[in-house]
Image 1 (tube, helix red, strand yellow):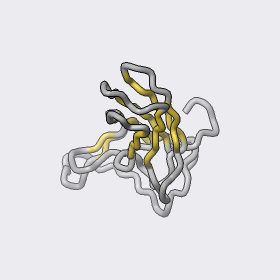
Image 2: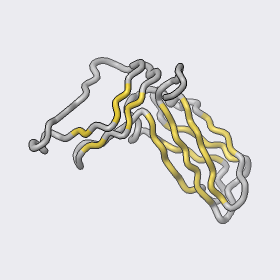
Image 3: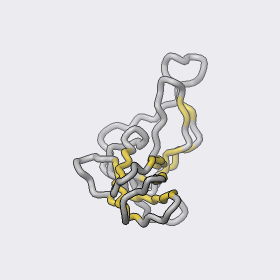
Length: 139
């Protein structure tokens, strides 16, 4: 997909007949996503809303030198993560780097490499990712 924005929609499962069932169907295989945003959509208790963007927070295990965040349940397409931004919230400074290297095809996880092992007090890492490759500013 290229240059597509789908946001602020509500999808309902077939069981909920009182509302319209607006559905987007993608035929074929999506190999890449460019300048596309699909987010802020909602679904009912049966349908799980996914997006081209997602944010996760994970506790830093004491002694960990890296943390893996798996976005598989949150991202819409079976395409690689194109961008990731992470921050560490801890009582002491911990530098970090983000690896987008795929361990297998269609891997939708990232690895946050820590500059030193997480201390006793631990902390959290928060990462936001995007499946869409950006060629234009403002997305």
